[in-house]
Image (cartoon, rainbow, N blue to C red; front, side, top):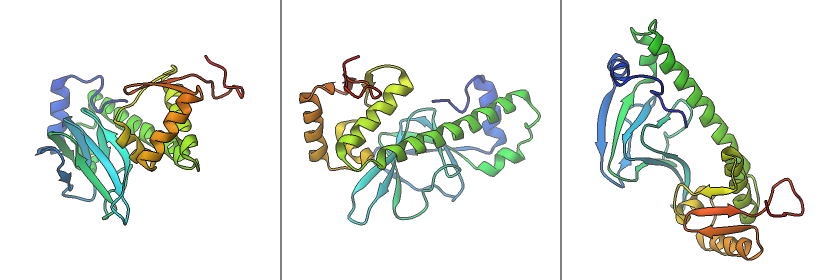
Length: 217
């Protein structure tokens, strides 16, 4: 994914952060993060965070994984009610930015600030695409079809039949909003039926989505 400070020097990034009145906060592992304002951009400086939706029974659905140098923001997500949490999955440092400061910056005429803005809008576009992909997965009614849709989307994005899961299988179940045991059973069936191979976090697709006979690649 694009980074907020791609194609910028460290010095330029520091100048931009200073002009935006950004500040750093540290959070220990498993700490639930509460932004101090309802409008924010959070840049993960070190560590990584998980955005979760919590249902009435306490069940968790992973909405987003945000790694080092990536951002999450109220600009393209809704985190401000009791149904959502922002969780530090390991010791994490976040640089907080107020979005309205972007438009007030005294660096707006600088070329490197324009690059920063281009990066920001590209990230918003990518996040929107990811949301659409997630909806495509969650609209599938069966666990099998959710798994296959998730695998297919990742395969197409990377142009390879090899998929490396960004999280463990418990988190995958939460991301797909399905029962962990039922998902494990369906993965075993898919493996036995020759749809996939599983080795650790690597999934190998043995079929082509556009080939109704599901012949190997």
